Amino acid sequence: MNKEYYINNMKKAIISGSFDPITIGHLDLIVRTSQLFDEVYVAVGDNPDKSYVFSIDDRVEFIVNSTYSLKNVIVIPFDGLLAEFAYNNDIQYIVRGIRNANDLQYENTLSIINSKLKNIETIYLPTKPQLQHISSSAVKSIAKEFGNIEGYTTLMVKSKLEYQTWNKTILCLVGISGSGKSMIGNKISEFSDEITFVNMDKLGHRIYESHEPYAIKIKNQITSYFGYGILNEDGSINRKVLGSIVFNDKTALNLLDTIMMPAIRHLVYEIIRNTNTEYIIFEGAIIPENGFLPLFNNQVVLITCNESDAMQRAADRDGLPLDAIKSRYASQGSTDQKRLIIQQSIINENYGTLIEFNSDDGLIDDKLEELWEKIQKISK
Image (cartoon, rainbow, N blue to C red; front, side, top):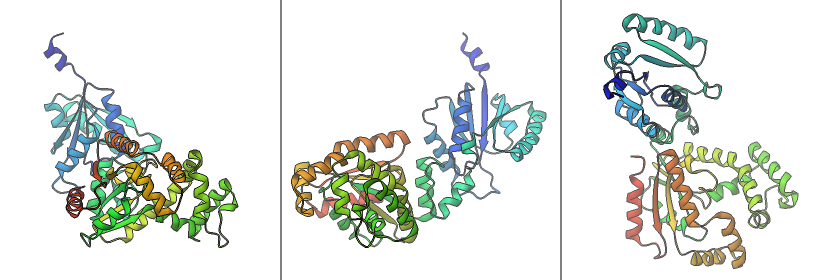
C-alpha cells in the first residue's frame, strides 16, 4: 500500500480539555478513543483568561506520562479554535465524554458549531458509571482538604498536586525488622526541623488502645475473628497475644492487615493534615506488602542489610527467641521481595523513586547526609 495513501486515509480524532489535572476519567476516554482511531491528538488547552493550578508544560507532561504505552496518542498544547486546528491537521472527528444530560446539551451546541465551521464530526462516548463522579475540580477539592485522591488521578499527578497544595513531601522508609529503620529515620530527623518521622507500628498501637468510635469498630472486627482472648481488661488489644497468633499464620496476618488498612489510611492523612513540616517520613516493615506504596506515591527508601544480623538484633530488641523472629520474617517478606514489589509498583504506575541504603556499616554521618540529599530531591 502506498504510504502517502495510508496517511491520507488515517482515521484521526482529537480530544481537548484543560486537563487541570488529568483524571482517571480523562484517561479512560483517551484509552477508549485510541482503540477506535489510527491517531489520537490530546489537545491541552491554555486560555490566558483562565487560572490553572498547573502550567501547560506540567499538564502536557502528566498526560504523556499516563499515556506512554499508547503509541498512537499525540499530546500537544493548544489554543484557538478547535475546529481550525482539526481542519489544519486533517482530523475528521472530535471525541467528547458525556457524563450526564447537561453535558449532552452543552456538547450538542458545540457539535453544531464545529460542523458548520469546518464540517468536523463529533462523537460522544458515555462515561463509565463508576467514573461519573470524577472530575478535575473534585480531585483538587479533595486534595485541598487533605483527602486521599488515589484512584481519582494518576500517581504522578497525585504526588505533584499534594506537594503543590500542601507544600509537603510524603515518603516511606521500609526494611525488614532489625534493619535499623527507626534509628535511621530518627537520625535523619536531626538534620532539619522540616522533617517529621512517623512509625507506622505506633499507628496500629494507637488504634488498639483508642476508644474512638472508628477504633472500636475495628477492634470489634478483630475480636470477631481472633476471639476476645486478645483483649486486655481495659478493652485495648494485647499486642503480644495477637502477635503470637498472626506472626505464626500468614493467612491470619493478611486478614489482620485487611481489617486495619482503612483505619491506618485515616490516621496517615490525619497526621499529614496536622503536621507542618515539609517532609513526612512514614516507617514500616510491610508497607510494600500491604499495598500502601501508592499512598506514599511510590517514594521509597529501602534499608538493606545482612538478614542474619538483623534477625539477631530484632530478637535482642524484642526479647524473643530467634525462632519466633524467623517466623515473623517469613510472614513479613525478605528485602529482595520488598524490592521486587517496589520496582513493580513503579513500573505499573510509571512513577516513583527507589532509594536504597545499606545499614551494615552502621549509621555513618556522611552516608546519612548523602541519603538526606537524595530525599530532598524527591517530588521536586
